[in-house]
Length: 231
Image 1 (tube, rainbow, N blue to C red):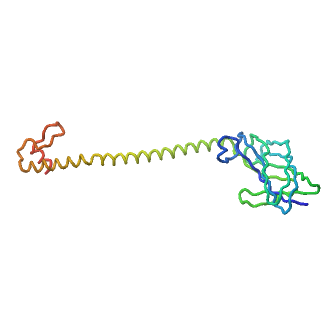
Image 2 (cartoon, rainbow, N blue to C red):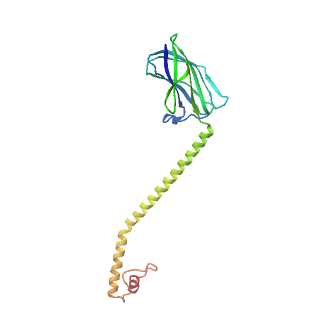
Image 3 (tube, one colour):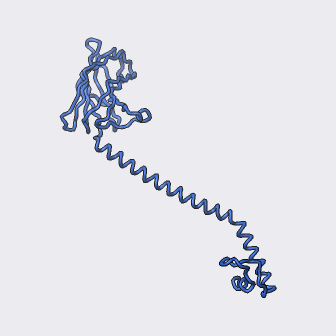
């Protein structure tokens, strides 16, 4: 009997921050990889063994690795998924890589036709051959990652600098308003005193003391000065 099995390459980073968000694969940084299996056929797959797992560079680098272990899964009903984690690895590979595996069904005479999902279009298509699967994944180079990380930090610091400038300008504006409001009663009293002195001096311009003071020397301002300044 022929079965249909969709297989997806899966990974998870092993760093602390990977607990909160999934990040990209990076050259020389460790990660754990595995496969998500989904029966997209109409009949149960009554168990099979995954073996001959291998991943190699598809970008021209002469680098690759094989997994010596095999992994067995039990009955997989139509529409059901299983997630199998293979092992934690690290590699000097970068760029496009491919991963392959073989399937050995438990039931004699069974054949598993494998499928893959295009990561860009989400279209599911069959893989050439049966009991065999191949797909691709991408590892970012260490230099590109570090440069991108440095650019991100620079951008973040620039944004924080702009935000700090905006906050400082806002606080300065608020301080100016506060100072204006705080000094308003004094300015009102000063205006009232000046007006009273002007009225007083209009009635007696010969007075030597108008009730105001000369700010340059602290002496009483004569009415002649007050009237001259308030023409």
